[in-house]
Image 1 (cartoon, helix red, strand yellow):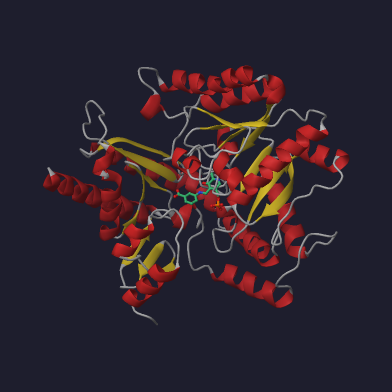
Image 2: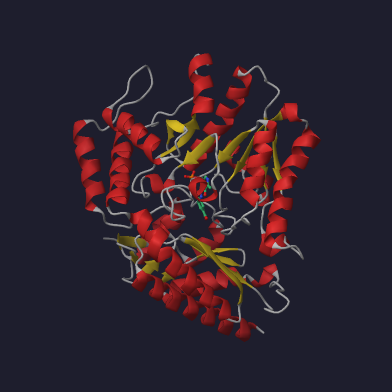
Length: 454
Ligand code: PXG
């Protein structure tokens, strides 16, 4: 095998990474991950790292599950590829569609397969507009999303997302996608209680519908808990108010379950936790625990009925929609989640334990807030705990902390100065203890580094 520096050199010469400042990375050289087992990663220098992020919010059942390898192998032998176009199907896609209808809320009985969360959200945009067109309301094209949301990187998905730096590159958003405020009490709550703030943040939707005109608005999209934006847990009052407004105006409600789905919140879906009755649910990531790329859109009876009965042909689809190997792996992944009662274990035992231990990090001088829900959690790093004053952006405190975590043997992601985790759902109590110990060590290292700078 090539050495670390050989791999870094060829990587720097040929590989353009996602969301990366190329010059900056090539100065340092990429970290090379070579192996994973259970909840641990190993790099090319032999360092063992606790994966606090389940890859990228996806490896829910952990690494090294041979059953998934066998499922892929057997499927590749029998039918490595065939498509779902031209009135054909195959056993893995048909069977997975039935299983998905069973694990999702009752009113979801159809799926449209994609290869990623971004493609799922592009599909959502086309489906929503098609739905209203078929209902004779072709003017209803506007989709309302939220600032700082993340829905993917394709043109439509990045437009649905509310990341300003993404919009600035390439003239986004595409027409008829608008954004309202996010329900981020820690940042924007001011003097209001979380419950008051939740209602106010949701009512921004009604204000926007009235401003645009009800006849123009097609749908609202939101992640049950914003992941990439920094694990932003909405106050308990938020989703019921959003639901009330969507119901009142009859607009479609889209719950982007790409991160929250498949057990991340200690329930099958974020919608189960918040009792959201969505019309469409994009899914990906935990669907296959990241072993192979697969995503989809769960389509409710309300929308599927119109597409099926009144639609004729829907001109949309991907070569690899419902790829047989990806479907076989996803099916095996869901079997394991069910059989090993992974979600029940998170809900009843490990998530409450994580919540208790994570909260202890609030005692650290750098931490203004430690919040968690299910198996997602965040730390707000602040300069002054009493006033909750933030660090200047130029201090790059989040990045310093992220590096300190890596050096300590822990993957924790930074979103500005918010540190986030979303561990594999198979973390047990000893992994949680190890996570807290490593996080504390990394916070101390970050404090030391900041003191040295001043
Ligand atoms: N919706 C949500 C809610 C997501 O979090 C996507 C859609 C897009 O999925 P794909 O499979 O196209 O990437 C995502 C993806 C990060 C990070 O740094 C988060 C995501 C992807 C990459 C990085 O937190 N989420």
